[in-house]
Amino acid sequence: MEQNRLKSPVVWAALAAQALTILVTLGAIDTGLSDAINAALAGVLQLLVMVGVLNNPTDGEHF
Image 1 (cartoon, helix red, strand yellow):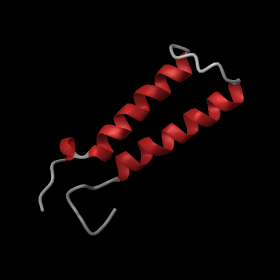
Image 2 (cartoon, one colour):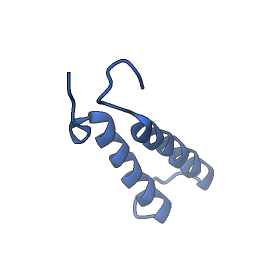
Image 3 (cartoon, one colour):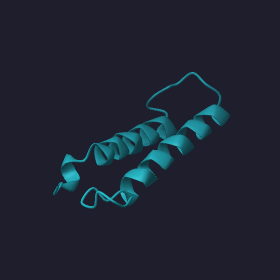
Image 4 (tube, helix red, strand yellow):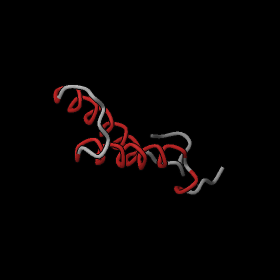
């Protein structure tokens, strides 16, 4: 099955996570949480971005 990268939901999730990370880091989105929790949230979102970048939707057998 041939799949386009731009049609991959993992890529779109990574882009959304990156946008959220930027907004939270810049303070555009106020979570109302402490700085430590905001940093942890940004770290989790960056992990999602990393998974999206490393994902290869054109190969169904490998990551």
